[in-house]
Length: 313
Image 1 (tube, rainbow, N blue to C red):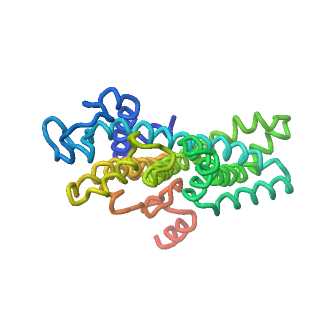
Image 2 (image 1 turned 180 degrees about the horizontal axis):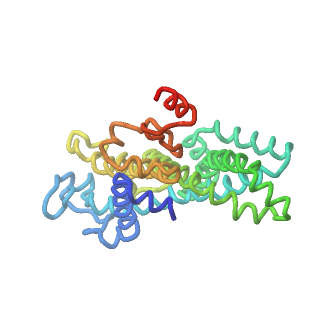
Image 3 (image 1 turned 45 degrees about the vertical axis):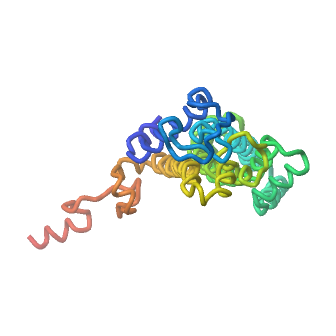
């Protein structure tokens, strides 16, 4: 709860949360709120913004705004699916690796290192070509490649807590591993997993857009952000502004997720009270005193200075 309270005190975090809330509403209710059918074609093709079509029409006369609103759902669902797969694989294995012993630890590290060197897009293309061109297959493949990041972060935090005195004392008093994980380790691991999850969500959105741009994962004419970018590039002479609309959605969403991840990190470290202003965050100003260390007042008399002052008097 302290992390949540510190998070909402950061102005940039509130802006990022507001943008992500709007994107979530559009993802859930976008198809119902769309002014037109996203698949309906109109004779007025490649039209600019107007009262009837706020963002214009595409090369077959479909309403651009309606397609953006309807395509948000598939883009967000694909990214969430990839992140969930990565979490389910990486976090439990990262926690268990601390207690597996040297042989189990060596195998887990070698598997994670092998998965980390594989590129997301190429691996997703290979899986889609093998298992069929579908969004779920591609996102499961991307989630498997994201799992090493969650594994290493979870393992690093749990490994540092494993040798702390209160954990060792709990084990000596008879506490089981599951009890230690729930009461002493998971609460420290969760903020780091949240930061990694927000970053992974932004990466997954870019991967979904890249696959849709290449025509993989989602079959046209189903609207997606990446698919709209790919279709608009063929008509830049008639509509040079068309790729801006899905591009802005991608930039705002991914940027908000990255900002939120940074704010979660600061809020969990207790830095929110020291850096509240948007200007300070933009210029990167930081206090010289490390977080968590007390600041000694200038007029404090230390034990070494007091005898000197008495002699001088």
